Length: 280
Image (cartoon, rainbow, N blue to C red):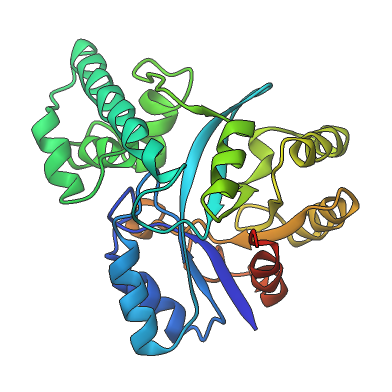
């Protein structure tokens, strides 16, 4: 059986409500599904309630953007529950930083002569936390760009004219806070911090030294051969190999929950390994 340990709902930058994420996982007969909205845990109660209704194991958590010596990377913090806690208490500050960054991005786009307002972006996000995909969606709707990917390529990605940075935790600090909160820290899509076999080997060794328990090896954008190679390398450094689709609904229309671009099947052993890695 397969699992999907990386999905997003409209509580952050996905298009589906949390309950729909669980429904899709149940329709696919997945063994487990995780909701990993960015810097926020608000979707977890609804997703868990639906998971209990349909009888599928559910993993709560959040995705963090953290600082790494070679640049920024994303970290998946699994088994993080809503409420007070070492990591939970820091999430509000991260969300405040994201909101400030969003205002700066909108102002930068306006400075480029683009007709866009913060109110339009907020309407696109609805009740969820606003992120760059919502800004991109407004640009698509207004005909500024043809696709969300095109909005990032032209305006919103790092190095593009409307990109603005935001505050982030350091990777080792984020991993420590995750463990102190009863969670398991995993590096998401590691290609963002390494580009070849030598780079992956060096990074994986550093991940383990930083207290990071796992690495997302089974990822939608990786060829099957790379997934297996990364999983083998993770094992060599004592790291758990995890995986997921990075499903965002219509904001990443080429990625389907559970199967990614059609060839993804994350082994259920990844879920079992995460369970075993939880702090005692």
